[in-house]
Amino acid sequence: MRSHYLLSLASLAMALPQHSTHNIPSLVTRTQLNLTDEAAVEEAFQAAVKARDAGQRAPRKRANQLIPIVVGGAQALFVPSMMLAAVGDVIQFQFAEGNHTVTQSPETAACQPLQKTVATAVHSGHIPYKAGQTTVGTFNVPITDTKPMFLYCATGPHCQLGQVMIINPSNTAQVVNYAKLSAQAKDNVDGGAPSGGSAASIQLSAAAFVPAPPEAGGGPPPPPPDSAPTQPAPPATSSAAGGKGKGKGKGTARASGSEAAQQPVATAPPPAAPVAAPPAAPVAAPPAAPVAAPPASPAAPAPRAAEAPAAA
Image (cartoon, rainbow, N blue to C red; front, side, top):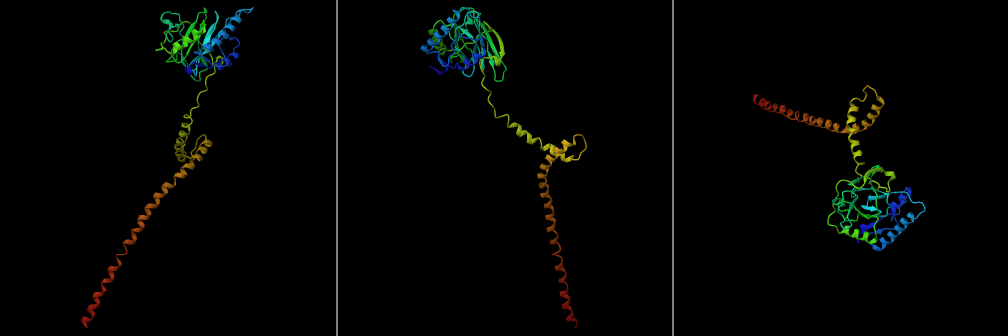
């Protein structure tokens, strides 16, 4: 069957020792549980029944318990997905990453809210959890009888993808059939107003799960370096204009002026280039004018030499 029915319960098993009052007779195991594997479910179910019966036969009846169930997370599941609880216990649904609900359905109509026919049926409404929150949303459901309770998440296709659970199943077949029925459901129908429990919140440090660490984004670091170089340019012009200006804070003004002075020095060569261009033009003009004037004066004495022999 689909891999989304594989439940990793190790994380909850590690968190439970921190809550000694949560001595849960549940199906928390070290291995993965496939809800459609009847043999595996039967073995885990019988182990839970023995744990429950042992507690009931104890000389001193156990006190009512607050039993945490993790809703959502990276796999969008209920962890654990099967639970045996006694009358007087309170199931505390703790909402992990994502946006999820705890919604009760009929046994034969998976992914359909029981609220349609029973107004007091369990429905938490959508309770989100985002990375960075210091509190965790909860929905506490008191156990008033030991009848099976079939639950699913009404967000998107979560029910069809395997986010279902059963509290106090009568037998193994109930668990397997409900898991298969939810996978075949055509629609995932949301409930109405919250009912069947009470919404609250707890500190993240008291939750039965550890959220995934936030991803380190590479986008934010680049913008600060880009904005830093653009700001020193305007201060350089202001410090050059008033480098020896009087006023308070001379130490900081000189320090910033010395840093900014290095950049204006690099910009000084551009004005020097246009200064050399104008002198080149007037140097070529003067030699052209005096060359044409001298040849015109020696041409006059030639005719006078011819008149002298005629008079003799």
